[in-house]
Image (cartoon, rainbow, N blue to C red; front, side, top):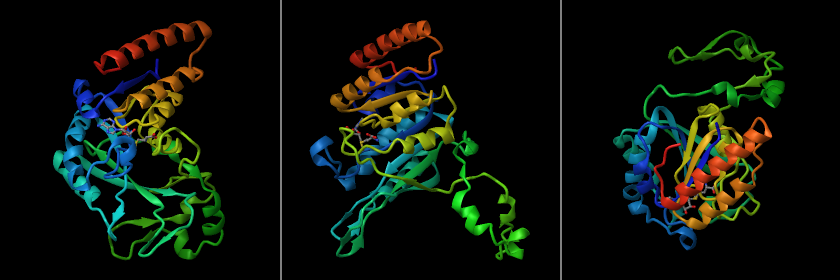
Length: 303
Ligand SMILES: C[S@@+](CC[C@H](N)C(=O)[O-])C[C@H]1O[C@@H](n2cnc3c(N)ncnc32)[C@H](O)[C@@H]1O
């Protein structure tokens, strides 16, 4: 079965120690941000954030396959008129730990409403940091191509002579572009700014990310049947999307109430991926038995 799911309750740093090495294809997660939302699940002081995170990322590095990818959604807030630097320090510490900092995607929150503070404007983006274990990782770029759309109507309508031949970079770097290559194409590759609306409806979690976010990275970095992990699961967006997309998934959260809610949602999901009714009933029952035992006893967490 391609879309088994496990929900584990506890501190991810501890739980991950029971995982086998090199088993996970993709980690997509949004940990608690420093000092945020103290009332819901405790804040971590920005000065202590790196020390708090690094033992957990040590386990993430171990369980990720060499071909796998780790996507970390995080954003430093501003306090006393200055941005915290803990995310920058975390990036440096992760590199020291052995991670490659491959890319930084920007999540542009396309539905953020206007606002103004004395010394800044509305925060409308968050970091999606990509880390890898090796330079050769799985990436299925065609899966996230998007309609050529308005860009083609404007940019390709009146091509200049430069546009029609390869436009070599003026600095002699050897890089260049040939825009006319994109004539008559339906789809183009996206760039590293991702336009997703924030979640406005009530997901029973104060920091849920939109379904499109894990969906985009799951498409880009995994195939059906691969294993996706969210060590800070919250309302379970990553695991629920992974399940719909026919990927195996494991979600971990320190708060039991979130684990219970996610399990309930999984129970209510239609299992459309099974071939026939008999198959469905047997597989589902079997899968639930395993899942619930794991949840109660604590894991020997491999799928
Ligand atoms: C920012 S939220 C994740 C939101 C999630 N992306 C979603 O879509 O709902 C972070 C979650 O990490 C959990 N958490 C905090 N410390 C943890 C730890 N040490 N191990 C596992 N989960 C933890 C919190 O309970 C919280 O639900």
